[in-house]
Image (cartoon, rainbow, N blue to C red):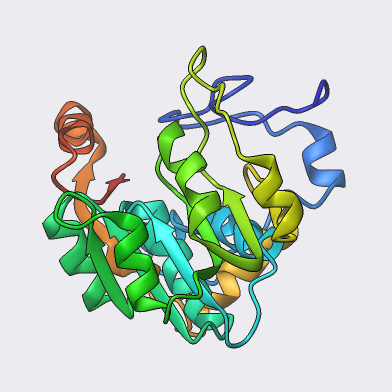
Length: 243
């Protein structure tokens, strides 16, 4: 995408008191009003939630689907909560962190799997009646899981590569015969559109997605270093900075 640009990616914007918003952003509807009743620390989650909205759309999650989300971090949890809103009959979470899996259960996961305790193919088959998952969302940046996910999908299943891999480590061998004969769809996604952002705000405003429940720490701007330490430790979930 040669014309792609974003605050914090192609030009500075994070932690600044003031930023210049390009005219093109206004023209495209990228400036969106937030309801006064919404707490600031919750409003900060509209952007990550918009990414989950985008991921669920490209995954074509339908009523009655069995969805499996790999990675019970903040983004995986948002995907799980969105899948429940979309009408999935079951949403399973896979991770290696017991505390995060417990949080996933509290937030609505139908079941969880600690992949250090049980082989994943066996675990998924036993929880889907031997059929496999209709949708697998990979919110964990692990190449081996991309390959494994193909095996875990039911016929006509969809795989969403929600998390990107590290630069220089993104070459993964997939069994394309499985994609062919099982009629699978493999799709990627990144970010969210202004429309996704507005949907994310509505989901939070109506309480359909309680995104605030993934906030583990709130720091004042003066404690910026502590906030980064908390985020990098991996012990919590979403860390929010509040002015």
